[in-house]
Every structure is written in C-alpha cells, then in structure tokens.
Image (cartoon, rainbow, N blue to C red; front, side, top):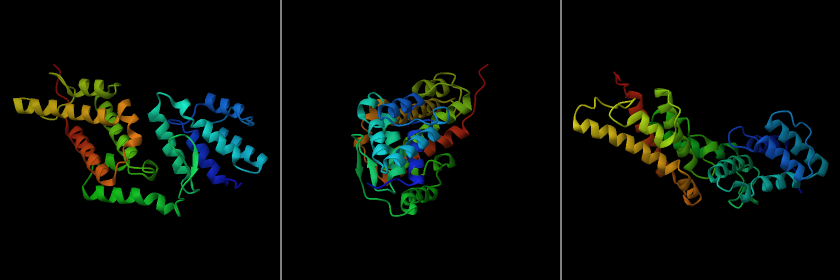
Amino acid sequence: MATFNQIEVESIADALGDTEIGLTGTEIGHLLHTLSMTDPDPGITKRKRLHNALAADQNKRGNRRGILEFIRRAMAPGRWLNKQVEFERLRERLNQALSLIGLEVEESGSVATADAARTITDAHKRASNLKANLILREIHPDVLVFCKAELLNDNYFHAVLEAVKSVGDKLRSRTGLQDDGVALVNRALSGDFPMLAINPRVTKSEQDEQKGFANLIVGIFGMFRNPTAHEAKIKWSMNKEDAEDLLSLVSLVHRRLDAATMPSRI
C-alpha cells in the first residue's frame, strides 16, 4: 500500500487537530491508545502531536493503513451524534486535505477513493470564479473574505454559512453584546429602543422597516445556523448561483449594519 508524503500527513494532522473544529486533546489520546499507536509528544500542540504520532506509525508500518484507520475512527458517525454541524465542517476540512490524493471521507465516515484534483489551481478555481462574480456585484468586502477554496470543497454551503456567522460578529462588535442568534438580533435591533437603528424610526413605515430588517436576519440565522437546518445540509447541494444570491443578501445586511446608528437611550 502507498504511503502519504510529509505534506499530506501534515495536512491531515492540521485538519484533525484544528483548534476550532478538530478533535480535542483527550480524543486524540484516546484514539491513539485504542489503535495502539505511539503518542510520542502528548504535551505539544494537537496538530504537531498528531502529525508526529501518525508519521511515526506510518514509518513503523511502511504503509498508510494506520492513518486511514485513525481517520475512520475519528469520523465514525457514532462519535458525532447531536454534532452534525461539527462533523460536516471537519469532513469538509479533511476532504480538502485529501482532495489532491484521490481520497475523500464519505458521509458514513468511511474513506473512499475519489477523483483527484490534478493541480492546486483546480482546487482554487471554484473559489476564484465565485469571488470574481461577487466583485462584479460589488459585494461587501466583509463577505468576500469567505470565498476561499477550503470553504468550497464539496459545495457552496459552507462559504455561505461562514458569511452568515460574520453578521453575528458584526452585531457583537457594533453593540458590545455577547449574545448569539435570535437573542442577539432582538437585543441589538428589536423593541422600542434598539441599540442599532437603520433609520430614524419616526414614521410607521420606518418602524416597520426596522422590524422587517431584524426579522430578515432572524430568518437568515434560522436558515443556516439552527441545528435542524444543518441536519439537512447533506441533502442541500447548493450551486454557484444560489451561493451568489445568498451572499448578496448577506452583503446587503452588512451594508445596512455599517450605516446603522446607535440612538440615544436617554
């Protein structure tokens, strides 16, 4: 059986040991112990620890079977019950690392063969095309940062998901609130004394616009952030046109938030 080269092992370790979406140190230690793999450096960062352990196992075996089994165990569906979002994000990150090798992690957690990307350029082509089209639309710059190849490995869903998260970040940065989701929107934009106002809120029409804007963001969050939406993500094969339209909507939200004022609360 073939072996992974050093860069490939590093990419796999970087994905599985990612600070935000990867395995915890305890989970890494448990899996290494379960698979009888040496854990040479348990005190260092997760990525380096995992890289050293996987590389040492491959050198010992002379093949990549141990690394593939580690991936299978790490991505076993039973480990991710009630954590569908986290599973999908890590699976996408792993598939990015595996795309040039001709492998992919399936929805079942198994590792299967896939059409290998011929060049790194192929892996970034989709992101470049999307970004070019959005630039023509004069999309808000805070949205363009999410048009990255690593977010578009399987489809466009994850790029839109991350862009939607940026709306919450902007609401928190503008208001100083620490809430998330509906609670954040309600405190920042709803009620008789919102912390952010997109208009003077004097006329009935202006008040309705403020309320509608808050409801719009709540709807966007519900569509992409709620667990029920994420559970259906596997079945949602989003195309480029859908992504462009949705990212345009997120862009509109960003522009209105940038222009919003903080009314006096006296």
